[in-house]
Image (cartoon, rainbow, N blue to C red; front, side, top):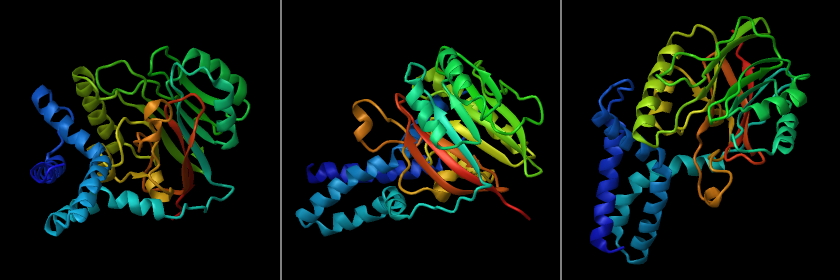
Length: 328
């Protein structure tokens, strides 16, 4: 890259960084123009780490050509874009789980994945207490009921032959009738809520799968869904486990607004490394991925251990978290 091009790239990166973080989020705005601008900010924040990797290449070239001032100008944005991930890779995984902790799994099955037995072997090996399934089809329903129903007898499910079927399986009985379709956005996509009681404490379980913001109609719907989700969580009075495929990363404005409501990403709390969950298959699987799947916890819950693992046949890795109730 020529010097002029490198300067333009770095100046643009700083400008976009400030733009992406300072743009106010109006999730339910009907303006397609605003949604397009907000989508640009969203995508920049989703790919901040990858932009940082590109800047690392420019930094190396600057050192080789002894452009010290230019290299110094790169350091702040590099510390911001790459620094957190670099530190996370040095972090020792938490391993404080106790036998009475709750093991939670969030699993996007991939609707066209017919590799049921190997996937269920991986899931069973985690000894889960609660599982949140996305892309839950009729074929998966039959296989999961046959394999897991005895261990996780309490379930709410909504099989679909598209990408938006969902289910929650639990070792603990539901304390009230689960909701299969929360009022989120205008699309008839199942978003679930159930409640269980563990150690005399009721806990709300949310299984979420937001539309991928990849075309105009999906971008608008995704934003409406997330705006409605924020209102639902804000009104939730129980300790909460919010899990699923959010089609947004830990750096996204979505994660920031959930944090503002007091929710914490279990992997950030007790995982090690970046914890990327997508893509797990295909040509891009060897590239630095994205953490699109999350388990969020309210202030009454603590993650003692978190990890991701490959689920055979799915393009998403499983997210696994051991969770403990915080006693007063």
